Length: 243
Image (cartoon, rainbow, N blue to C red; front, side):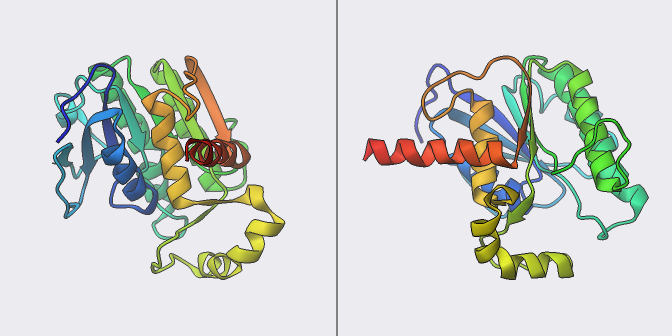
């Protein structure tokens, strides 16, 4: 295990048993700029790592018990969520909006200077006028995060997230999109993003720099699918130059 050096970050990953959260956890653990990672979720990860601390928490409607765990954190990567149709509308609102805002409340109280990277969604509507419940709920969550007072918030709004690894798709639409992905990514590149690329970007922004070493300024930043792809492209270009 490498000894922590000045400038290394303490990160929290929420939802690491999910598709994007799982990749985010891996990138955080592998990142030399991260000294330790706290994973918070309902299920055990089934992995061990010198940097990793795992915390099981069942009731995200009340995160008060996490106050001590969240103290002294530099950033959070929040990937907890649910698919439309997989739960009731009331549960979808609770998971998408209420849980996010409650977690943010406790994190900001414990670590007011932490950065926050949030897995939102394409079409997230902060006005609340969208006919799509998912869009309204994600928009409401975004507003709650902005109101929480974090110095840096990154709101990621991916379109279709390609799973990369085979999985049981949540519904017919996702099964269809997975089959059509090879063509879709060529015809509509700004409407798709790989799960691993999305996770890398979510971790990278809260670590505090791009691959070019540029610092992200304070404030709120919305990253649409094309913006996320641009971050990933900059990573690929830098890796090629470094070879």
